[in-house]
Image (cartoon, rainbow, N blue to C red; front, side, top):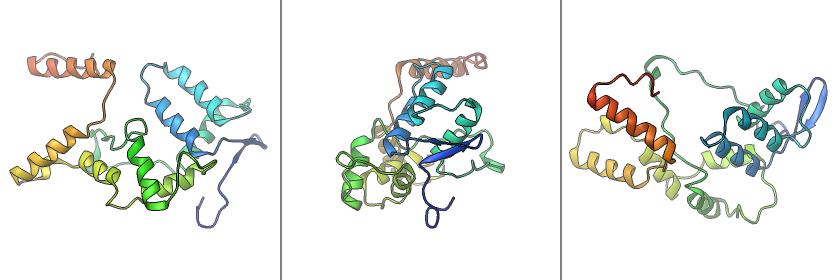
Length: 198
């Protein structure tokens, strides 16, 4: 799919039948928030997600899930990471829950789009606009702080500044995740086996 030449999908084909898919940006934001919610069981997440995306859930659930994820990824394939990325965790640089005001303000500032008042905006258009926000938007600056690799900064003052910014704009995590991280940190400090904690 190419956003420049193809009509953006509002339905998917499963077993030769067309199924409407909720294509508004709000649905996919809710999906992303759902996937990040550790208070909901993984199996429950799948069925809640299907209900979010499909007004009528297809009988072929596996295909419905595949098409739902394809739609969420804006028709793009998952990029495989090779080489030095192995073993590195991906840093979350934005949160639709905690950065909502920054994202809202950026869309108003750059595109004059009021995400509150707009009736409909296709998810793929929203993502293209979000990825193309200019550097002077506060959310882009914040994402830059969060993604900064402090180990590559040699200057002590600069390193201290970015470390401070990362702390200020750290994405809050829920109590369960905080307790798990604290337990892992304690185990590492005391030389215990952390394999059971991960």
